[in-house]
Image 1 (cartoon, each protein chain N blue to C red):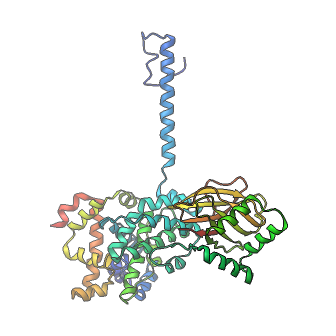
Image 2: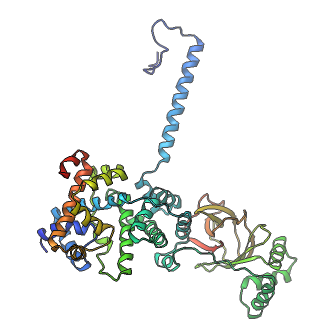
Image 3: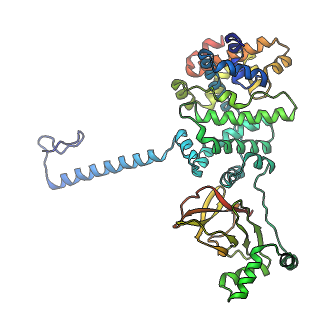
Amino acid sequence: MNCRDVEELSGAFALGAVPAEESAQVVEHLVTCTDAHRLVSELIEVAGILSLSVDEVAPPARLRSNLMAAALAGDSVDVVAQRGPILMRPHRRWLSPALLAAAAMFVAAIGMGAWNVNLNHRLNQRSPSADDKAVLAALASGAHVVQLVSSTGIQGQLIEPQDGSAAYLVGTMPAPPPGKAYQAWLMRDGIPVSAGVFKPSGFTVQPLQGSLNGVQLVSFTLEPEQGSKKPTLPVVAQAPVS
Amino acid sequence: MRPCWSYCTCVQPNQPKGAGILAQTAMIRLQSAAVLLNVVVLLSLLRTDEDLLTALAEQDASALEELYDRYGRLAFSLAVRIIGSPETAEEIVQEAFLSIWRGATTYQTGRGAVRTWLMSITHHRAIDAVRRRASRVQTAPIDDRMQFVGDQDVWLDVSRTLTREEVRSALTVLPDEQRESIELAYLGGLSYPEIAARLDLPLGTVKSRLRLGLQKLRGLLENPNLHADVGS
């Protein structure tokens, strides 16, 4: 393909209207030809402003919050795309009192849910703390249980009492590195609000500060011991809650 | 005597220099300095698109929010116009912004406007979706084009300040056949052979219309006074 051919195709190329195979030949020429490069550069910039010509359509408010949740969660595009049109759908599991008993028996029976076993172990070893009692009471009255998702070895659940009182993180978390602590974040419409800083080691029952009302995602990050004003990526664990 | 500000009246001839006037003058200076400081602080809070990209490269989530607030509506409008489905447009826009979020470190300052980059990604993804849906021929990956985005300062300055009305106005001045071909390519996602087939035109004619149309459009946007000449 020579300079004249590329010049002819420059408009179509700038608009992305050249079939892939032919486009590769254009690129091959452009990397060696200053004049053709300049022409194509100019037209690509013009093509870029054509977006301004379309009628304005207001995006739904959830797009912003979904975007921020996906960005903070470190989602890849492929993962996001697989979720369908409305992203970060709720993964909340509602446990009725009847199902709760069955679920508790199931968990205990097959040994899944290290948090539950550990909690019972703790209760057997010493007097339960106020937080332990609060979690048990919340579970007994049909709290919402949301599974944490983590790629860093954190296992646990978010316990959301039905009466709207403070939610709890119950799970096993590795000790944070020296000088660091875990910080919980409540994400509402893409805006993170700190829900507390804590330094667990192993099994933990941690109350979260603030109501989960309107929260789409609870995320956990590693921060300096005094906490941060904004989350520092990556997110080490998260739980979509609404 | 220490030099005084030019607009200060305290050293005007024959003016009383009582303690009250000196205090008043000092207060005025103090207030002026405070106003100046506020302006400086406010200006420092306004981040340019390039500032946002720098912050994005450091994974500053607030920069992504700010970028979305600036261009989310524009990107969504473009995606809806191309794909037709608001639900699919949501996916496309989210993917485009996530792409910027992850790829901000690859952005080179001076290589085209950030808005152009973002809109090009949105456009490309929307067109790809249209083509996949219709099982049509795929065109080149976006990187093929974006690596050649220029750094002409004059055009960057022009493009940053363009409004919807200005772009629409310039498009209406283009000859109908050029505008039609550009719209079929940009908004319809047709390749130039597909445009030629649809309009029953030789390939060379379509290629010329696309190139000449964009060149004229650039001229019109750089110099709006050309509107009257081009249309005739």
